[in-house]
Length: 347
Image (tube, rainbow, N blue to C red; front, side):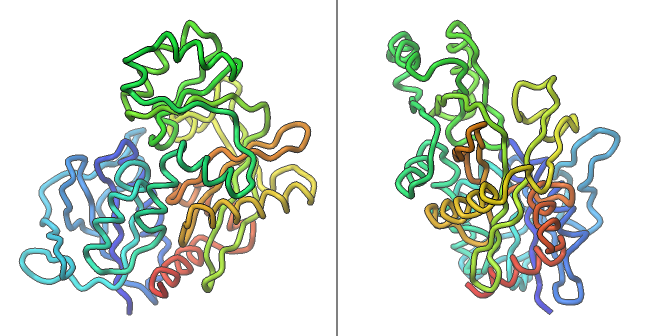
């Protein structure tokens, strides 16, 4: 039986969501084939061996987190150890999102361990996480992107007035995004130029590079990609529905208020559906992703498909969009987890 280390938590802003995802994986992993071992990473970056019954679910409106006094997990070139004893692990499932989950830092650390792991490698993760850099890869691959401007913290502080004037060509509204932020944190919708400076400060509190992007008038659509027997497959896409009380698909709406849902299949023609799936696979390949990804698009009223971003470790709870899209495509949650573990071990 293969032993799987499920990693959750981490120092990033999506610590709690990672815990929810890990709870989902633990509840559904095929225990006839895989023996799970839970490793929690505190917000301070400490790795700990957690019991399998550690509370990782939403309790009375409170999100879970990794804390407490548990045995340290020591990492070295020869693998991992707990309490001085070597920890025999065949494959790692790092269910971390955003910073130190999808930005290549964790993947670099895992590469040092010499243990197979689920998902993209360090370079692809870093490229996908940086929205500004990813847009260049997508555009080079022939995928339509929204008009945008990238600004660093140094450039903003040097001449905020000039930058404010330069974005006028993008029109209003615009989205001001932390270029390497995750889960919509550090993202602000700006409807008038007077609000731009405060939006920049908000985004810069999450990252030193900011992407300013024209708002696209269109439906938000997601498509899941999964490697099955070495071949990337695209799921039935879903259309995101957002409560009109929210300006956009932000963190609050996405995770805390239940103000969104995803309609699967997305209500488009077979031609549009097929094109979304094709573009999702092109984006996956353009970034050099492995294992899994969720690719997000806008579909305009005229049928144009514009990519928004790619997530190399999307939300992975039972109710997350990624497993829901695969369930609608005929592949259940447990089977998705098995495919991911098989893919990691094969690599």
